[in-house]
Every structure is written in structure tokens, then in C-alpha cells.
Amino acid sequence: MKATGIVVEYNPFHNGHLHHLQQARLKTNNDVMIAVMSGNFLQRGEPALVDKWTRTKMALSAGVDLVIELPYAFATAQASDFAKGAIFLLDALKCTSFCFGSEEGSLKAFEHTYDLLTENKTAYNLAISTLMKKGISYPKALNEAYDIVSKDVTVPLVDLSKPNNILGYHYIEAAKTLHATIQPETIQRVVANYHDPAKATETIASATGIRKVLFDGANLSAVQTYMPPTSLEALYEWQSTANSFGNWEQFYPTLRFIILRHTKEKLAQFAEVTEGMENAIWNAATTCLTFQSFMEKIKSKRFTWTRIQRMLTHIYNDFTWKQLKETELPTYIRPLGMNERGQAYLQSIKKDLQLPLVSRVAASKENRLLQLDIKAANLYYLGLQSAFGQQMVGSDFRIAPIRI
Image (tube, rainbow, N blue to C red; front, top):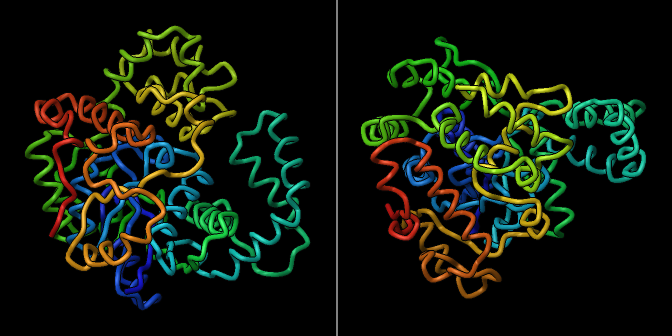
């Protein structure tokens, strides 16, 4: 059996994801689709709309054969580390290929871009450093430095101002630097871009657009055209039991409590908190009653909204600079769910796996990265501020991998 890997968040699973899944299966002509999926906190520094178990059900119902959790330390990391963790796991799972969605749609352009930045690494990094010293944010400095080193290039290159292109580049980079045997493929993103609002005239919307519709107070019926029926059903089930969807506004009372119980000096010890941001974060928490007002008070040209949210995610989940610097690569494979085909594939490679397979977390209590996942799951449920959330604390020890 041959497997294709994909890296996902499914926040939530929508028709665009279904298109990517179907096209990846067609393009790679493999037997098994494996998704490495973020847990309850995501790469942009946000709580997931619904928990990892609900999103696993969405994935399996739509045709994914095996869902593996991307550990918290990588799921909430900057793009390069996010990609490194995900590609390492897919390679460890013996996938022959991985397939990512991109605005570019051409694998050759990604390869040209990788070669360019590798050959001009010193000049590229120097340009980034020089631009950041002028007070420019890191993402903007990356783009301007990229423009500098690519200005005379005639071969096709990737537009690295596009979010899926950025991740795609880092997937390619990770596969090459890890000397992975897994081969890349890309599929062009259709209709909706990453940040686009949902449009009533389309059947595909971005996950960002779908979440915005829901957070603006609309009923779930307002997003039904953008999602497979199984995904919509899972959202209805979640809403009926959890009463609310995960977002920072919902989590803010807990976040505010956590911030204010620490000193500013302690806040500076959490991952990605840098350049005095601990002062702004603590001061804003003393006065701001909502997450929106809190973010507006501390945002700056120096740090993007996403970068600040990742700081807050690490404060919320007690993840420090020390822990971040000690994290190199995933140390286990944790299945969240599978169908019969996924289970058969896992059985077929089980003896050849170089990482421990963790189906029961109670049997792996000493694994440092796994303990972070369990802690993040518990704090996610507490942040929901509901009876359901209270009941779900400790569920990582009670819930076995889903089988359909």
C-alpha cells in the first residue's frame, strides 16, 4: 500500500478541503490518504473552532484514511517549524508523497524558489536583518528581502506574499533539509483565497471566511453551502453540546486571569514573547474587557496580529522559551482516527516505524511533547466556559483513536 500525506487544520473542514483531498488522491494515485492535523490550538495562534476529535470525524467522513496529531510545539510554531514537524511525521509514516494546496499551483516554481534562496542564503538573511533593524515586521522584511534577491531572476518563482505559498515553500524546504524520501506535489487553490470572506454566490469559501460568518452571529445554516453535509452535521452536534465555538473572545477571561497571575518578568519567559511585549501584554490585561480591545491596545507595526496571538497561545498553555529551544523534531506518532484502510496501512508499517506509536496516552506519560498536547487539550476545554468543557478535561486519557 502506498500513502499520500497532507498537512491540515480543518478549522473547519469545507468544500475547498474536499477538493484538495480528492485532487491529491487523483494526482498521486495512492491507496491511502494520511492527514497530519493540528490539535486544539493552531498555527496562527488561535484556539480551534471545534476540538481535534470533532475535526477528526470531519476528516474521516470526507475520505481521509488516517489522522495523526501534529504536536502542540509544531502546530503553533512559525511556518518553518510547523512544516518541519509535519513533513517529518509524514516521512516517518512511510508516505511516498505529500500534496499541498497553493496559490501558485506549479511545483517547478517552488523548486526554483528553494534553489534561489539556498544559493543566496547569506545575502537574503542579511537583507532581512537590515530591514528588521528599521522596525519592519518579520513577514514584511521577508518579502522585501525576497524581492531584493530575486529581482534579476528570469525563471518562474513563487509569490511568497501568499499564505499557502509560504507554507508550501517551507514544506519543500523541510523535505530537502530533512533529507526525506517523501516527494512533493501541489494543487492550485480554487475560488477562495486564505483570508477571503465567504460569498453567497460560491460553494467554496475559506475557513477564515466561514469562521467570520459564525462569529458574526449567523446560524450554521448560513455556511451550509460551503461544507460537506458531514462537516455541517458535526458542527451542529458540537454546538448542541458545547454551546459555543472556540475563539479568543470566548477564551479571553481565562487568558486574562493567566496573564495577571504572572509577573511581567515571568511573561517574558514564554515562547515568542520578546522585545518588551510582556509589559504591553500585562498592562493591557489590567484594563481591557474584551479580546478585541486587548489586541488593539498591544498591536504594533513591529509584530503581526498572528505573531502576537502565538505569544498569547504560549502564555495560555504555559509553553516557555526553554521548552521551545529544546524542541527539535516530533518524538512520537499519535493517531486520532482511522478507517479500515488507514488501520490496515498502519498495521502494515508498524514494525518499521522509527518513532513510538501512541494510541493510549496513559502509556506514554514521560514524553515531554505529549504532555504539552494533553495540557493544551485540557486548557482548551476550560476556555470554552461551559459544562461540556469542564467534562472534557482529561479526555485525552479517556478517548481512544476514532474508528469508522
